[in-house]
Structure formats: C-alpha cells, structure tokens
Image (tube, rainbow, N blue to C red; front, top):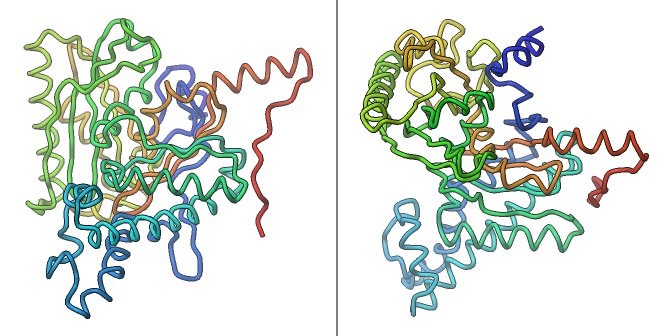
Amino acid sequence: MAEELALSTGIAHHGASRLPSVDIDSFNIELKDEDGFLGDRASKGAFREILERWRKPLRKTGEDPFGDEPSENISKKILDAILISDDTEASAVVHSAIEEFAQELAYVTRRFLKTKAWAKTERIVVGGGFRDSRLGELAIARAEIILKSEGFAIDVLPIRFHPDEAGLIGALHLAPSWIFEAHDSILAVDIGGTNIRCGVVETRFDKADDLSKAAVWKSELWRHADDEPTREAAVKRLVKMLKGLIDQANAEGLKLAPFIGIACPGVINEDGSIEKGAQNLPGNWESRRFNLPASLAEGIPQIGGHDTAIVMHNDGVVQGLSEVPFMQDVLRWGVLTIGTGLGNARFTNRRREAEKDEKNGKNGKKERKVRQPKEE
C-alpha cells in the first residue's frame, strides 16, 4: 500500500526501496567475519591503525619520521604532501599503509560482491571523507587493481563530487522530477556523527535535465560533537539553520522547492523513525517517539507558500545518489562510503531496467553477464 501511495503521489516514503531514478537493492548491510563487522576493516580508523603499525618498528629504533605525533592526529593533507616529498622513509611508510588498507578494502568489497544483494554489480563508487585525499584515491585505485587481478569485472572509482557536497546533491534524487519544472533549488541536510551540514542545492535543470550539472549554492556546517547538545536542541539548531538558508535563497531570488531531502545514518523506517545505526548522533535518535522529518515539518511547515514535503534516507544511499546521472551506461552499481564505518548501498537503474525488459520482450536477448568468481 505504501509503495502504491509513493508511486501515485510521486513522493517516495522515507527509506524507500524505489526512487524516481533507481531501485535500491540494499543499503547499510552489516557483514561480519570472525573478527567482527567487516566495515571496521575499511574505515578511517582502520587506516590510522594500519599507519600506526607501520610506524611501530621504526619508533622502537628512534627512526620514526613522524616523531611523537599520534597517527590519528596526522592530517590527510600532511600525509598527501609526504607522498611526494623528498623524505623517502616517511613516504615509504605512507605507501605501505595505503597498500595494506587497499588490501582490506578489496577484501571487504569482494565480500559484498559475493552477496546476493550485490550480485552482478558492474561499478562501485567510493565516497566518504577518506576519498577526499590523494592517499584515498591511491587506495581506491589499488583496490580496483587487486579485484581485477582476482577476476572481478568491476570498476571501482572515487565519487565524482566532493564528499561534503555529494550528500547534499544526492538529495535531489529523493525528489519527484515534476518538482523541478517550477523550482530551481531544494534544501538538503546531511547528518553525520560529528557534523550536520545543510545546504541549498541548485538543480541547474535548464543546463542538464539529468541533474548532472547540479551544484551546492550555499551550505552551513555545525560540528554538533563539539557542543554535545540534547536531541531537542539539535533539532532546534537544525531548523534555525534551514530557516536561515531559506531567507538567503529568497533574497537571492532562487525558486526554492517546498522540499527537504535528508541524509541520515542508520536504517530508516518508512514512517521516518530510525531503527538502528544512529548511535553517534546527539541524544537517542532511535526512539520510536522521535521522528526527525515530523519535527522539521513542524518547525518549517511551509516553503514559498506550499506545504513542506520531506524525505529522509540513509546517508550512504544519498551520497551514492549523486552519481545517478553518471551511471546510465551500467545497470547495477553500488556505493561504499569510508568514514567512521563503511556505508554501503546497491542500486539498479530503473530506466535501464525498463529498457532491458522491453528489449528482452521484443527479441529475447539476454543482458550482459558480469563475470565474478563464486564464493569459495
């Protein structure tokens, strides 16, 4: 019934498996092995632990090129600079850490590809904060080479947009296409365990109706982890941020749609509650008595004289959705986001699926098979 309602109104429900452009085959899968959750092997923290292990033998002999600086405090910018510096020993340490992390990323990706939900995946984009660095790009490229050497016919690429913007731009694909005919921008929210980012996203629909030219017009960041607010205070601050962006958009003459797209960690239920995975957010967001979309609708009941529509989905899903315009040459694709954990989602393009069904119905041709090794 909910699926029928979503299709008839054109507005997807929260955490929907069907969106205007794609079907979401799975998201937020939590795979495990004997050591625990697989995502923990390919997270930002995992890379720091690997870097620390490579420094340890050098530290014992007093030859650690990084001195006493804790590995978690060394910025990605510094590590990127070391990769091309004249300090060969420091560069070798970073390269060693990248190689080991790439092996872990390849292992985790391999396990995803062998699940039923990720079967026949043709391409994977990798997002998250770790991607926004040269060392991240090298690890992604190396993981792709490892997978291909093992017989996986898969492309593994860095996400196209800056990770800070991909989670906002992807919110456009939560909205029904008809909303872009009379409006040129939407409000988007990207909620993380440390930050909340809000932004106005321009559709630039007149330049590209597939939303490939979309861009963040203006955004605002709040590091809620520094303030440690209550849940209610966090929602109040979020409403204030959004109202400020509405005022700025109106002053600029933007035609803001009465729509807010939200990217949020965890498993998002159809009613807008969060089932699990939101433990790093301020307060108890997994309570059945808390509903963020409803709270925002109460705080911002209308935009531009029209009732506000709100759709919330998993943050990994939304970040992946930013790639929809650039994935039309494949049928099935996925996203991995390297952050505190490892976000994941797998998509099937609805347009390509419809074209495939029509083609098969007419002449009986079968889809191209993606060659991937079987589970050992």
